[in-house]
Image (cartoon, rainbow, N blue to C red; front, top):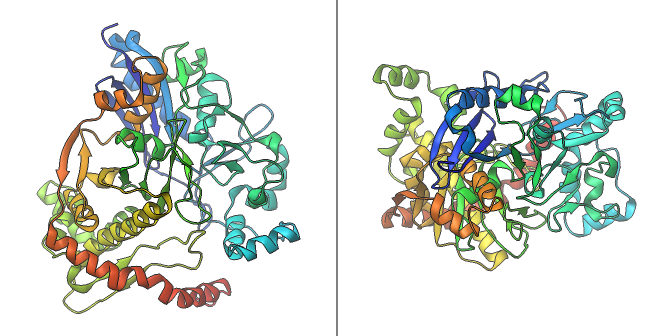
Length: 518
């Protein structure tokens, strides 16, 4: 064996990647297959995908990777799968899909058919979660299927997260770790096991116990690559597949976050701030911390839904001229817009955006807000305001988690596709007043997943040793004092006060929409 390698599969929202990673954190080779249609919309608000879509793309990427690395096949000691969260597969008694996969971006709602016992309804109202629990119930994919597709519900003997299904296709065993089980299903994230039948919040999405799947610790061998999977993917038959975690959990570890004074910022389709804690706490009231891929820990997380998706939306809706100009210049539209936005001062000359493009359980009535428009603002002000708004919201999230967890963050590590932008990283540093670091690769999820496998195979004695060997700081963005002062003035005087002041108006708008008046 020249050097041990881990074969990682990173199944994302926009593409699937098959990657070979070594013990130094080097991306030895990578094949990325982008989706022509990331999801299908049969109706407004729906987001689904064909049953074998992700497995087929995983195999396609893997086949090419293995064909051009035949000489390295003997060095591969394990493979791992990390994937997008809250994406559900419904299976029959033979583990064949009973309907299309429901994607995490799906926004359909079921009816609230009074499913809660009376005493739980009273309890939810008393703790201030009456409306939020109803929204949680209505946005659950399993509840929608149970209400609207009775035949599918009856045929479905297992309801699983996407990575568990991919594990099954590769090994024949339907199992995954708690760190890879993040969805609207009855998971007790604190105990890292399925909820008990009488748990208070199980009624929000009460999947029967026999429809759930086997949970194993991160680092355990789930199974071995079958002959059929080997023929389809090119992965060596008999190769062990090791349980890891979801894409965010693996990315957090891959960015070296294994201490409570460091945080990971993911500038992805959905932007998040993740921390590391060996003591469980709720990052916001009633919001759970998710299991980390390091079994003794959790990743407290707050998410900005849509996040850097908003930049793609902006380019699609307002960037036709910029796309044409960027093509002539031989650069991406994002690079051109970043150049234009970097010429605008911190604070966007008074233009500010609050990035609540998608309501959540804790802010059920929220909508996005853009305030401070004037005649001297351009579309480049708006582009920069999106980035500043995301950073402001992540900063507010960090302060909330620091207070609830009794910790203090001193370093930030940026990942996700948006972290390629120097402008975004500098705005992040200026907002937080902290150094922002980028590592040597943008494939942090694959690095984190590979770490789990290397530690499990005994190639490292600990995760700290793995981090020292596999994570290398490449760029550091230091906060600019004047910009930080500007952002803190905006944050304290305006930003953190917006939601509570306009929430009644959001509620009115929501009621009008519910009544089909808008």
